Image 1 (cartoon, helix red, strand yellow):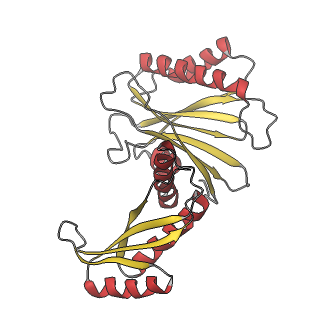
Image 2: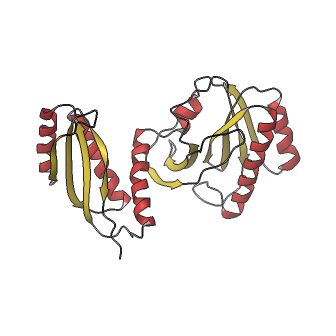
Amino acid sequence: MKLLIQILFIIAIGTRAMEAQVKEEQWDSYIAFYENGAPGSTTLRMDLIGETPFDHLPYVLVTGIKYETSRDDGFPENETFPILHKIGDELIELISKETESVLVGSFMYNKERLEYFYIKEDSGLKEKLEEFYTNNYSDYTFYVNIKEDKEWSYYREFLYPNEETLNYMADQSVLRNLQEAGDPLTKARRIDHWLYFSSESDMNKCKEELKKQNYSIQFSGTNKETSLPFELQIWRIDKIDIDSVNPITSELRKTAKKFNGEYDGWETSIEKE
């Protein structure tokens, strides 16, 4: 089980087409430190979390190779990436011919990349994968493991990010949109935040605490369109880089929970040079 110590960065990647898949896939990646201090990179489908587990895919298949690298972090060097991507594509093709399956993610850590599939049945798949690696990638040490995972715990508990990581990803998504609009993220500016509460009393208590943290109150009142009907909009001049913004939003989430409320995100202006 992983221990998330610090999230380094998020890399959004495009949607990936898979055979027999009818909905658009939403893929994302994050890098985190693990128990021994080494970083690991997780890439996964984000759109499945509300639908899983799938009863008709009760087995998890974990397979991949070990690679050589001179990097201290254990991640592959540039010339290795095409090989890893080629193996990934070939695995999708091979496995889809043998059984119903869905690729849910991959994990790179300590000179190894593993692909995670959920499959309908084994039906000799392990032997076919071993033959695939032996015939095509004999210079690499490979790994193949198939086990029952009816609850999809590998996807839901290992690959899928925890709340802290999801919050970081949300902040990074806003910053990515700003950068795509031409904002270099160098200028401090007004950042607006929204918090919601079930009672006016809780909202007012939170408001007073946030005033002590030099937040200005833009709006404090009712919003009947939300499940928590009392809305608090605040703002403050802050730096906009991820190392500045993420601690701010993390603290606002804690403050909102302290007063039985919820933090609902932030926005800011686009500032071009």
